[in-house]
Image (tube, rainbow, N blue to C red; front, side):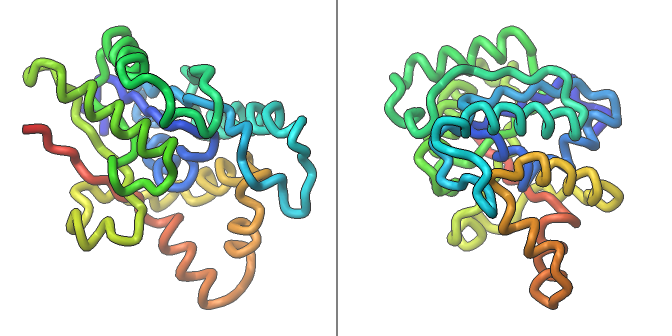
Length: 222
């Protein structure tokens, strides 16, 4: 982890960083690796309003922005970029404009590693459009200057199609910190937090899934 020059995280929604990467990102921060998180939207159209509901359609954007700030702070990220796109519209943005946005971040930051979603295996249209923009942009760079891509895949057929993850990060010792990140996104994570707080066999399996190891696939560009 100490070998990375700069990590650039690109996700479309507040809370995308929480589930599969926040333990890993916390480790980078603790190892003095610069981490920049570019969050494309504020999750304005998120379907969850809290459990029990405490947000409204009108207040949700402000709440999710505050949650994003709190989550980034819990991880230790000081360079949080809010890119200003509207939720559920990334798939409709002109591809050349999305690619230019990604390239501008790469040109500015010169990351050795980019963390994002894996195209075709990230379920939500905004996830897929973001993943495709990242891969397209890096694919168009000179091979010698391309950052490594560590991508998150969570569709049901990810393991059967892609095989076992290439990178498995042990986040033992970061369980409490990751929980704080998940708790920061309370408008979206309430049911999950309730499940993790209960004392059942299912809860223990969920804790093993979310709080022990984080998994990434390396995207190999020809």
